[in-house]
Length: 318
Image (cartoon, rainbow, N blue to C red):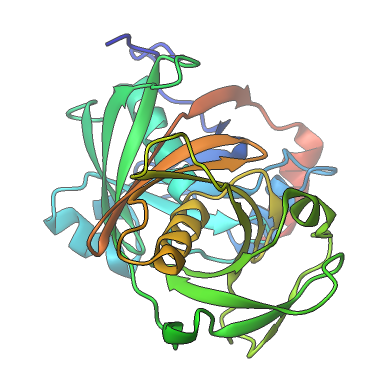
């Protein structure tokens, strides 16, 4: 297996850097001792694409023993040395991010921070997620990262195929959405065609009825009729509106939710593996009972040095 490190593992990680998983991009804040926690306003400034660095979210890389997060103690007891403290682009806290976990594992591997770079337990607010390394089946990159995403549930009245009515600009009438809990909330909407998926106008937040008090991520999908020829593998196309962010190029937990909804609608004989094509790239979701895993690429892109002006603006937000 080819080792695809992008950094000098003998060097200390930079204070700030960037990376992505299928174009779902993040700012990494290296804070091993838990000394640099940022407030919501500072996170939003760094993630702003016009006046900051620009990203879909910020990930603080911190040891579980120093994270200062309630869920970190259990993660440390479960053997996870590192905690992924994830914030949305608006500074709000998010429970989990599947693309973020893959990018986080790639970060740990790139800077030789993982005790076992082929098998990495990562602490998150949604529990410990185990990441393993495997060859990229598409041949486009050296490695893929597979995340054990844990258990999922359908929290609503899924017998009717949907729990929520979703009104979206560009889509003529409200469509039913199926709620899927991946440790963070999702609502999956099936559309009739690729043209309708393209027409959905996601620069504005969709309107949900009922509207979840904590918000939800909304996935719009079109199920491909023939998949890849394997009856146990399905294919679908997806776009996503993430709470606290807007439309993003990809969403890992959203891809899992989309595959789970498609599997639910297909019935017990439907595919248990799904290739999910998103604007940022393709991932694979595998379903085993009430467990699900997500596999796909990740990449680090830049080391960041803030200007004195931006540092001053950050200090002013303390």
